[in-house]
Amino acid sequence: MTPPTLDRSRGLHVPQGELLSSRVVTDLGVSLRRALEEALTGYVLLEPQETLLLDGDVHGVLTLEDGVPTLVYDVAADERGSRALARLADPGPYRVERYATDPEAISSLHGADGADAFRVPPGAPAEQLARDADLAGATRRQAPDVGESDGKADPLESFLADEERVAAIQEEARAEAKRRADEWGFTEEFADDR
Image (tube, rainbow, N blue to C red):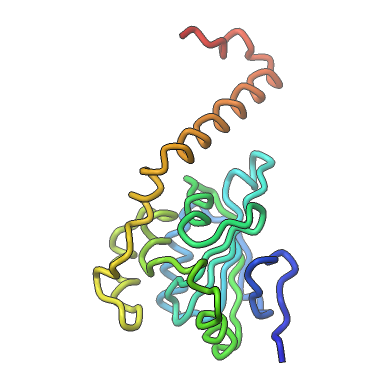
């Protein structure tokens, strides 16, 4: 039997879960640490600042097994794994919804064909989303069969090496700032004097 799915997760069929909490947080590390300490098996839905405050369209799903982040998906852009993580990276605040699910359903999802496209190193969400090296280390230690070095490229280094992505984010930020300045009547103050 196929488990129920979240309609918003077109590319990642996440088992229906029990909502544990829904809140806006300024430090995503607190939510990730709590999931790790509670050994949460389920998933977290994330809406970063871009969506909360700037009419963006970034909606992330982060699956966890025993508190360890495993798969990441950006629903709106259909981005997976490290690329999805890069889109979710934001200074905050975030809207965070935590769900608990059947452990067998999550384990099955993590082992499914095609899951590797969504997979991230265990410490990557703590490093890239929360900028918390201690939490990343604790997550790696709690991950099964994964040591301090998991043999994969560091997602932050990969992101920064993607010059086109960085340039696109900078351009989006400039366009948004210009639009807001026009909207608020700061056109002269915002004038490009290069």
